[in-house]
Image (tube, rainbow, N blue to C red; front, side, top):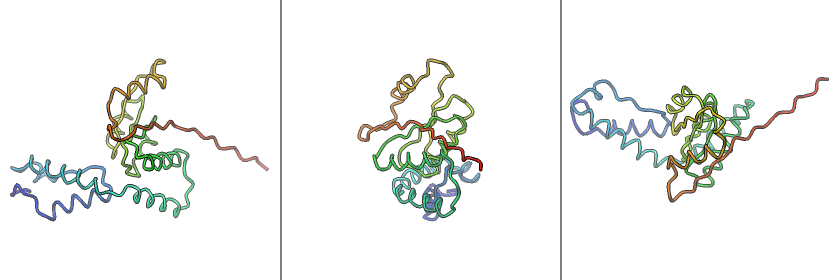
Length: 187
């Protein structure tokens, strides 16, 4: 779209393919972004991304990632297992939102790696973590103050003010579950 206000078939196909491969973001080249049709280029890229995301088979993506994890036979961290279960539950329940309480953003990104249909809401007390999470695919962060007043009820009240859930889909909030491993006894 450097010299033409209409995109070529290959330009649209490249964007669509990138979306299906799970790209987190899209950057237009300097020529396109600064050319005479930069507004049209950005609008078209946005439309192709949104349209492409509607055709993603989220369950198939989830199953593929889980299969690859099992093939790798690596020991998974607790946050990875809990995130996997939360995404599967979100898909099964047709949820509109998965909530993650996070300190550094690890759990939010573990949820986002599955490219779930529900939005991942990362609740954090760190401004740096909030900005970091906002860069991830399908993650929106909420910064809460570090005060004794921020208990679960206060946080849920703040969530209700955001108006994220769609009226046709239920809003499910899953709480973090902490599992402790038993230490192996030394022989």
